Picture 1 (cartoon, rainbow, N blue to C red):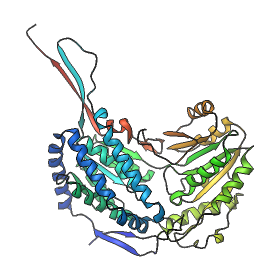
Picture 2: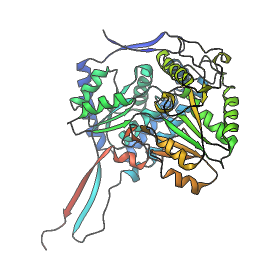
Picture 3: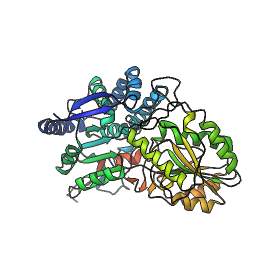
Length: 464
């Protein structure tokens, strides 16, 4: 029997295992989803809102179990676990709150004798393929709005966070969702692509790697189904000469190292104006030295292990290669007691003397390392920020909004921040360019990707 297993990065032990779904179970889930969706579509938006709200509250009621369970699955310290659930609720409630407006018909200027409008119809069955790094936040981005739009949802969660998928199922059952409307499935990669290739679903919402995104696109090719892809980033920050230095240091260090750097919109490269460069590096190093790397189940820990030893080893390799090529590492790994080669426990690192020939400045690290480069002008910073195959977010630190707007318009990215980073506002479109993928989640625009347009053009009388 093939198993779907989570190996905890905390201690290397198997935390949970489940058998992969059988072919008959998958077909039954698809059939049930189709049947449930037809009835769900007929329900009013307020009725859907009531059940989706109950779903969110049911999830929040499990916080005491979810927080330590999440730390055991993917390594984020327990002190931050409740924050993800808070974000889960914020996004879910916001998408519920805008559903009436977002799903309202588009009505053109009146034309005597005719009724004309464009309705927003549900797609049918939405397939959410969720990652492990923010397993509640990323999944809710598509699940709640898909349901509010009248769709059914099949959920495939990462093996690393298989218990999260089960929490989604439990919350749906506690809320009283119709049978089959939301179904969590334990699937292999082959089963996942087969569901898409066989056109069992009408939309795929995937968050993950570029290579996996290409596999998803190939599976969907020729089936004329929607595909939304959020495939990571190499997100830059620029600290202008007029920036609030203390604020820039504080927020960018957090943006680089929160969740052990395992965030698609985490800061991975920083460009600092030469007038602030030395002070910025000094402040960033001093602040990073205060981090406590250790057991994520300990409330004192501020930096947990990476998700797997192989992921930590990849980042170790990037750091080693950069140093060999002339970069300077500012932190001594031995100052972080839990740091150990051959384990997921990796000390944070700040590198200077880096350039874009180095992997650490061009390839996604997805770990606790950040490179810092000195720049002389806005133009130089813009060129370096755009010198990447990714384009999810970018951040500017400046006290001059006009200058920031001028810079932002030239940056090739889905979101530009000013004086903040590593944050997702559900009122704004979450999207990317280049290898970061395509499609939109959240905001009113997110609903457009979870519905299809249907035009109604009625001549009201034929007597004239």
